Image (cartoon, rainbow, N blue to C red; front, top):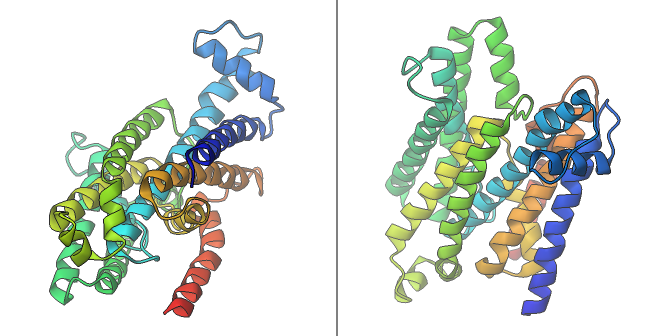
Length: 338
């Protein structure tokens, strides 16, 4: 792919993301136009004043805008995590959800919220991060014990996902009251309702750092496409690189899960769609995947909160309905290629 085409693709993706964000904010019970959105945002950023009423301004700035931006950040982060994991493990079915990292993060978050571990000194994000690392460590231990092949890593991830999902359900059913149970179970299916600017700032900062780390290892990820032995022959420190990048994806997954719950299949589907546009070079692939994931989840969240209005559908339910057929398609293509 030539440089002009790359620039056009990235510029088009960014423009589509900005337009999608602006339009998504207008969709809902309150009638709001795109110019209203631009006016409110410009006013809060110090570029002029807005003539909107306080109620309409609050709907845009305090309710819909944080939610839509967090959807974009979560979509971008999960898609990047899936891209890195698929490259490191050389498995087209790898993503944070399938490898159990999301389930571990959910367990850590639920333990903090429901059991009150840490007495308020441990935050939800910290609990999610510890849970993600525990799940990640279990996957590495099991896969190493079973032979450390890519298939063993994925199977170990499935086992870890089931284990931590069971632990989460056990904690919720035995320790949470009825109100907590409803709230936690809805959150575990993926929910962006009630988020604020604090969650947006945290997840955006973590995404920016992790994306920089992944881009710095873009050439190394390209080398992994030829296998670990080939990467080592090219001078790559395979063990160190895998630990750094998998810990990076665990950190990013933990931050996203702590704010939005466990949203599956984004990291599985979007990397394959982006590769069809850019090829397998990770310096091109990672930014395009991030933009595609952001646009995708913005519209999925918009659909989730409006399709059964006033009732809200968990975001993870919608991504699963879209992701499962895509998962089957990837399995079919993998089988046909083998």
